[in-house]
Structure formats: C-alpha cells, structure tokens
Length: 375
Image (cartoon, rainbow, N blue to C red):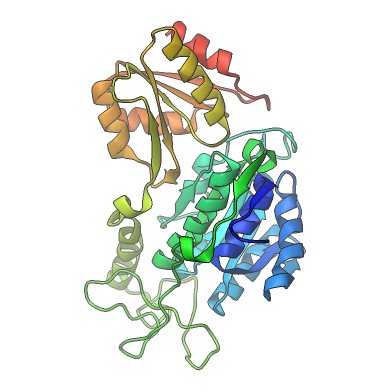
C-alpha cells in the first residue's frame, strides 16, 4: 500500500498493514473466526514485500513455526481467537523462557469453548497474562480503534524486539471487524526497533553486567548456540542449578518490572474533575465515551481511563484515580476480569461497580449511562 495515503480498512486488515510496517516478514497461522482476515491479508501482502506466509495444520504448529522463524532472524506473527489461543499456550511459554521475540494476535470472541464464533467478548484477558504455566514475562496490548490497531501493532513488535518477549495483541471482534478511514504512516514518521544481534563474551545468551536483555544473532548464520525450554545457563544449555534458575527467572521478570514507564500506555479523558471514573478498553471504549459525554451534558462529572497496555497492568494510574474519584465503574465484555485488577490497585480508596456482558451482545452507551445514574 502507498504510505501517507488515506485508506478505508477493517481492523484485522490494519493489523497486517501495521505489522508489515514494523518489519513483520513471516506469518504462520490457522484460520479461525473472527481473526481469519488477518491470515488472508498476510497471505496476500507478505509475498509483495519478500516475506513468507504458511498455513499450518493447527494452532500449536503455527506457534512453533513463528518461534522458529523468529530464531532465524525474521520478525514473526501469528493470529487466532480464543480456542486457538488456548492451544498456543505451551509454545508461548517456550517463547517466554527462550526469549524469542514474536507477536500473537488474539481477536477475542465469546466463549468458553467454541462459544459464539462471531460474537464479541473480552474473555481472554486473564489468559493473556496467566495462560501458560509458571512465572513468565508477558506484554499485552489492547487497541480500541482501527487507527490504533495499525499504530499499536508497530509498538507491539518494537516491545517484543526490545525486550525479547512474546507480546499478546489483545484485539476483540468489535475492533477486528470495524471499518474506519486511517492514514498510513511513512517509514520516516515512525521508530522501528530491531533486536540486538551483536554478541559479547562469546555466548549468545551471555548478559553483560547490569543488562537484562541478551543479544540474539540469527540462528544458523555463523553463530552456534543452544535453545531449550529447560532452565538454562547463560550459554543456553540445560542446568539443574537452583541458583542459575533463580537468576534466570528473576532477570526475565525484571525485563518487564524495571521498565513499566516504557511499556505501559493509557488514555485519559476528563479525569481532572471526575467524580465517576469509567474504566474500559478495546471494543467497549466507544460506548463508554458516548455515555461519558451524555453524563457531562447532564452535569455528571464523569471521566474515562483506558489502559492500552493491559499487561503489565497500570496499577499506579488506577491508584491515583481512586484517590480523587468518588467511584469507579469498570466496563468490559466478560464476567469481571480487569475488575479484579482495578479493585486490587484501588485498594479500597473509592467505591467500585461493574458493568459487564457475557452473552455475546454489545454493551450500549445507554446501559453505561444508566449504571452511572443508578450508582
């Protein structure tokens, strides 16, 4: 596509265009509603830029192919929905421990199990954080518009490359199938981050003193190193040492914990005097913004807080809102997943109420407004 041009795109299509702009050159996936358009667009567009597309036999294999391509030096992505996301979890954990950069798009749909394949949901929020076993580093980003889908997927790749972690791109059916006009960026207008490939100390997994992220030369291009899902030493070989395992997992977690200001992004509206703060993300955002504006017209001091980075969660920002607002209303298409995080971060400083749906229908602005009026 012509950069700098105004185009009409579906959210799923914008996801691919942004990924290509970020440097994505490999996609492996398996079709599943409501993410299939991402695979279709990747199949069409990747050959045009010298990239590779492959449809695998299942979601587990797709995740494995993405890991292999990334280890070989290509920025790699896969896309799925809830049932497929469940199947990818073992290999997501492998990518986390082996520090393989990759982006996993999950266009959420109503579940559990097969559920409603074409209906919206935000039911995979906790799975994005805790879906694979063990303590592991993860970043999850939730866009709310087509334009943001385009720009934030670039950021997802940048964070994945910078910190050598899997990044979950937590879309939902509403955003994935929405069509909006957006302006395609030019290369000179964006920052692209690539993984470090230079090696110091003669070991690919060697981490210089004071650094958290090791270099990653492309596998098979003149440098030999071992990759294993077992606890490993700085050379990448398995170890039974409790001390080495402790240092490894601590370093993996610190990659996220020590860089919260760089990773966490959010949007605030009208919180300067808000007595009621609405917390939302992704596909619930439009209804919340409309309800907030209607409330303001009625003299209700309402504001909105929207985490763009879902994981790590913006605890500090929620705590500040809870200090100033009289009440918080959490709006999401699930049974209350971010609700628990808001309650934890708010630490009892204000009242909290929940508005959610689990039946595949959309939360309407009037329902948000009614919840505010009846709080």
